[in-house]
Amino acid sequence: MGMTITEKILAAHAGLDTVGPGDLIQARVDMALANDITAPLAIKVFHEIGRDHVFDRDRVALVPDHFVPNKDILSAQQAKIIRDFSREYGIKYFFEVGEMGIEHVILPEKGIVIPGDLVIGADSHTCTYGALGAFSTGVGSTDLGVTMATGEIWLKVPPSIMVRYEGGLQPWVGGKDLILYLLGRIGVEGANYRALEFTGPVIETLSMDNRLTMANMAVEGGAKNGVFEPDDITASYMEGRSARTPVYYQSDGDAVYEKELILDAEQIMPQVAFPHSPDNVRPVSEATHIVPDQVFIGSCTNGRMEDLRLAASVLKGKRVAKGLRMIVIPGSQYIYKQSIQEGIIEAFLDSGATIGPPTCGPCLGGHMGVLAEGEKCVSTSNRNFIGRMGHPQSEVYLVNPAIAAATAVLGRIGTPDEI
Image (cartoon, rainbow, N blue to C red; front, side, top):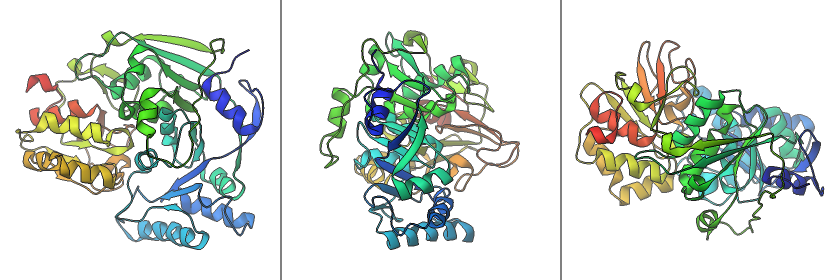
């Protein structure tokens, strides 16, 4: 019997010929990842184990991105812990202020993660790398600490759900809308400990930035991982990015799926996730009465180059509505620089937006855009739970970058066609 792409990657890393859903395996890890919130606890666990070296200093990535540049003494202490650890143990992929960015943006960008990898990260959105055809999933800091010491992890092989997108994309619809629409169909628990495998003619033409957005939000459906079969778009994206050799796995024709979902993309309009859940989804036409206080473009979901280009194309020559604040945060130093060179930052500044350094920023209610009581934010990030971006009585609406930009101009949720 054939295997899915997820099962093939896990089998290869466990040294087994075949695996199936429910199997418990001990697998070797290609990359272990943590950030300034999760790494300190993982480092504590690592020291408790008593190892005097990490399993491979070239296969550990420590990225301070949540509260960096540091917002207070506590966040400075957190960053110092991982900075000191990285120096002591010779961690190759530690990114200091001035070279860092959002972890799930810079690891693909720099070729640190490649197709066929098994990636474990102490951050739930580690599932992002499935866009490259890797198996990647989030774990707790305790597990990550053990993995940094041993290079291995225990995993249960997840059943796979095939999600097939047919038809073509409507105007202003991208990967964010495709995944939000799916979440509206299955709910935040609809793929609990499953692998979501994205396929179909729409997916085959989808850019890598849009694929990264979709894989990033697989966890919002409860999925263990989200994954795309690597193809020519993947190969083009990977060209010149890494000295390591990628492995392109594909699902077998007779692979067994727990279920198959077929979605007609022709029916998918730009989506808006209303408070307080990513699956509380409605078409943008049902959200035009929402008047936000803030618009945020960025995060590991939509802070990439294509996202900023799209938003800037909507904003160029227009002004942010009076009484509304707009925050734009590029996902990496490279994206920031490229945006300057292309005139994108200038377009944002001319429109009345403010630009932040490459970091997670307000996405998790950390800093640079925290919401006050009663405020509403239209955001390109991935979560809108109660208190996610600030006060428990604030509200977050999730949208794609084009809708976010149009909203900033209109002063209410709307589409670029309206301006």
